[in-house]
Every structure is written in C-alpha cells, then in structure tokens.
Length: 186
Image 1 (cartoon, rainbow, N blue to C red):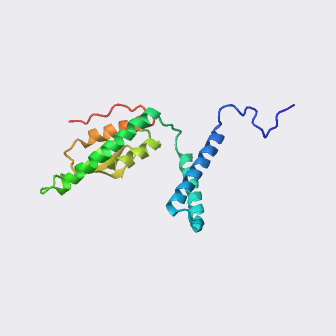
Image 2 (cartoon, rainbow, N blue to C red; image 1 turned 60 degrees about the vertical axis):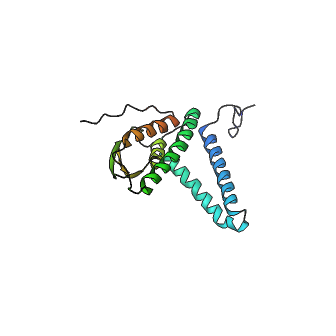
C-alpha cells in the first residue's frame, strides 16, 4: 500500500520547520490569550479587542521572524544571563539613585561610541540594545550599522568595558562567539 501524499510517512521523525513554526505560533497564541485573560480578569466583552490584538501580535511576530537569521538559545547561557540581568538591574538602580539624590550629584554626562561585535540582523543585537539601559546610567542615543552612541550619566566611568561585558553575556545567551574588542588608538 502506497503512503498517502497527505500523511507524514515518518510521524515519529524529527519535526520539520513547518511543524515547529506552527507549534510555536500555537503556543504563542495560547500564551497571549492567557495573558489577555489574566489582564482583563476574564471579562468576555474584552475579547472584542483581545482577539484582534492577539492576531496582530502573531502577524507581527511572523513578519519579524521572516527577516531574522536563524538562532537558538543556550540553556546555560540563559541561566548566566538571568543572574547577570538581575544583578545589573539592581546595581544600576542603586547607582543612579545614589548619584542623582546626593547633595552634590555625581554626574559627568557625555556620549560614548561603542563598536559592536554581535552579528548584524541577529536577535542578539536587538536584545543587547534593549538591555543597555540596565547598566548604571546608560541609554542608547543612536544605533548605527557598526556602532552605537550611548548617553552616559557618567562618561568618565568604564562604560565601554561594561558594554563589552553585557555584549559578551548576550552572545553567550545565543551561543555566539564574538571577535576580540577593537583597541582604541591612543
């Protein structure tokens, strides 16, 4: 008997990209629906807005995924990054609060250029940019193809070193190897 063209001849085999993407979309839809349910207290009338919002989010995710390079997370990198993220968030909050609430604010604002090493078009770059503000007194002012412009509350601090450490943690999260940082000319 010939296998049907519509049936998977090896249902126990590895998942194909189509199956994986469909399962991921279904899981994301379920997660978004659960989140909507929790945020609205389960109000039935909220689904008039919730269904289009969830559908729009799913379309946006699909569009973003289609433009990104393939990637995966390293489980050990996730754990290391989670600890680093919590520690640096607390440290950054305490540092900034101390600087601006002192009788004599300890600030030396300025701009810092940082040449990034993460691959272009990768989700690691996007996460790196989003996480920069967790470092003490830093904010992304501009994003370029080869470098970032960072506004620092204290430009005399080792901002570039902290950015390099964060970039290395993000790379570890995505199991990426970075080239050595470029040394600035003296």
